[in-house]
Length: 179
Image (cartoon, rainbow, N blue to C red):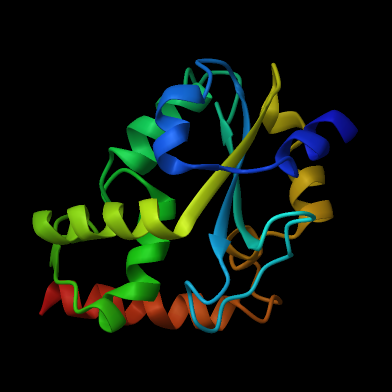
């Protein structure tokens, strides 16, 4: 796992740069944020850049899946919507009230189109990315998450202190979308 960890801890690139440099290969990716970008959320510090880790993801997420780093990061997270990206949904839930973004209900809460664009702009301004190519990223994801402790991944664990914060934000966001 050391080469994967080392690649994820390498100097991050901006999301704009990632649009042209993320490979069309399987692997893991790490999303890094500027300090203070998400008040109340803190993650491990990057070893050399003034950033904190938010999330680690995989592409694909299993044997049957066909996603690549490029399709997952660019297609779902950067060009996608809150309907297709759990990362975008978590960010929207945490930021909607503060940013004044509006949502609507489909089968889940999603931002209205203009606010999807606003979220994309926020992400481009506040987030950076690293990645590591790996032929079967799902086989090392748990170990990487355990070692790096990205708060968005850990927020799924009811024992993690961030869990109630994220769950409350998601609940408020769902209620706003249904209103």
